[in-house]
Image 1 (cartoon, rainbow, N blue to C red):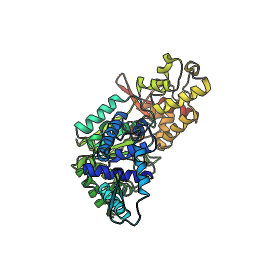
Image 2 (cartoon, one colour):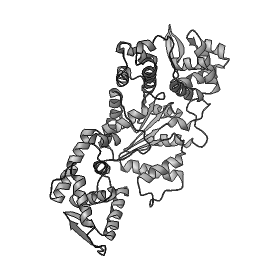
Image 3 (cartoon, one colour):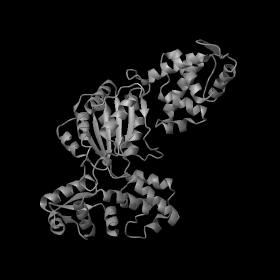
Image 4 (spheres, rainbow, N blue to C red):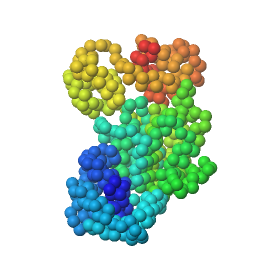
Length: 464
């Protein structure tokens, strides 16, 4: 008896008892049990806590036990349902349109099986039916193996979404800072408040039409649902679902919709209608939330925020002391020096992980030996990350970054204007764009504003 047959029989039992079909997590627990997975492994694969998975599993075994009239638990579930296979083989294939009970398990004929499967599919794909557990679609999501403490950020996001009813959140920060990890970990904290949770990466720059079509297919049977042809109608249909259900949509890698070689936040040709989509998310009345993850802030978000709509922006910075856990995981020595590494590499978990690996491989995990070198060391992997940011810059931005990187002193607007030969208007827009990319920061000294380039990018630019 294969996994799908077992799931079908179990689903029939649960439906008989409760009038409801197996939800997403219950199916995952049964699949995992058949495949000899532990609760911990099931929890990790489905972004749920182990305690929650155990509780759902306990309730599931209890319901199945009551229907079968014998004790069923994780350790014997597979064996009990394998018995159904022995008896099923003895049932005449001539039986049509009947359901036979064998060993307390209902074995359906092919016609009944097809009917049951059709009913189950209808239930799962009917957008008017909401399962006990949220429908979670993380097909595009990367697997998260480590999560380092972001307690404050999690609390902020949870408050915005659950208490304040924020409809659009922009999660910003440099590559590797943990935007994707944080948003996926957030799911486990707030999933019971939602009917649908969907993650999609826009890394391959799908058009808005493609994104809307993909989302609409989730709410209905893709073989039967009629997807409108007009973009406006697709938007209208999606917002009907966002009103009808409590949905959490996470759209990652928003920066891939923007032009390279232009100032931050300029959409590529054919992608400008995403601006309308975000604006409608903020303006239209609904009960859902959309999270946008990006390296740079979409230009229209500032205008939406100014209009006092339910919109928030969270900028992710250094992990701080929590980054020490990265070094513990890597078994680095000299813990008294770890703060130097954290400050040098800006508490960026990806960058710190790269450097920790370098220290492991070249210095036998001795941080003090690595720190003999005065300048920040950029391993190949880190240089590739910085290159991705540098390549996205406009010619004016590259000019400003180069001047800042080669200057031995911090610079203000007047000195930058002199050295870059940019007009005041060009220079102001360029600096603003670099700040939006988190590559330049402001510093006040004696009522004068100075601009400082990201130290690691500075080191990268000096080497190219």
